[in-house]
Image 1 (spheres, rainbow, N blue to C red):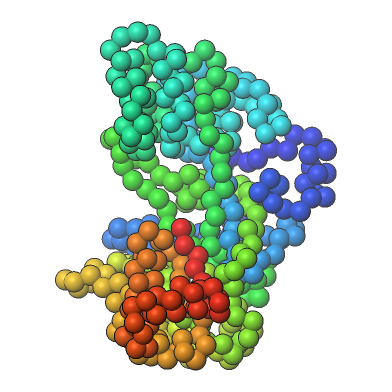
Image 2: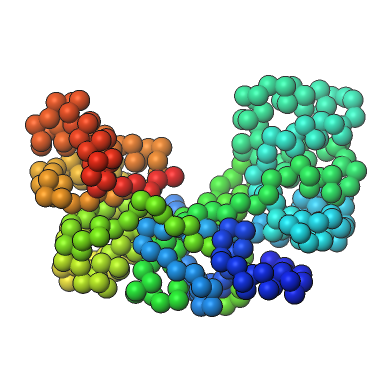
Length: 399
């Protein structure tokens, strides 16, 4: 089933036509291309999507993000409604200014693939006295335990655990839920190379908890439910204030983007190549296995072979006994990397903030210390202040 956002009235449609596109007024785009980037046997599922922006009025610059709204899996929604004991067509009042049914609201308007803390109190209020309620209150009254409990569960899991709870109406249940929020994806294309289109590189989130398969809201929707050539994906552009290519095309750029963090650097390369920029390009890319996880392999190798991507250093962490990551490749080429930085190159990082970006950051400080002859404090000052704040040549898009 394809779920499409509803514009109920002529005034709604006129407002859309007259207003700029935004989070509150997205453009409903169609997917025109969808292919899997990871190969058979990969432990990851990374996809390339092309969305048509014709007629939207949307424009973007490499470094911007695309906000995309997902819809919940119809199967998950139907299972949840069955546990609630309501009719799918039951009315739940006005949602986002329109009258809607329970099923429509659960498909498109609320997050149901991940539970929130609020619902636990709502269930507790509707539980009869007894063993189930006592167990529930032990969880609700312990903040750490409550966070741990809801972190790995959706509402189907919870309603199965506490099946004595009964909501008095569909609206009462919906009132416990969190509205759907957009997922921001780093744009993986240049408008100069792809007029009227926007490309995304999406790592599809899939996992199992409590005996049931689960998936990310936006990534799962794009991968499994956003059909080709149908207007199903509400989108808008989130402009970046800082994650930008240097204004001078003669400036060198160093890009570090493991996994789906390659996205903005594909856009950067397309833009610079289309503009005929004279600056050099150096890309550090990493993933698990070269045979199955070398994202955009043909493009990157072609650009490298043509001399448009001047350096390509790869780190496939599980292709050898000792894991090798992008920061290890940086250290292997520390002298040249330091030379590029001293000559004015920009340094970019995109990807995981919790681990990768921290490791890359510390590696940069280590290179400044070892190659630049700085003391530990001076090396940190150079990276944290000079590069990041004063010269603004070290830019990050991390999440």
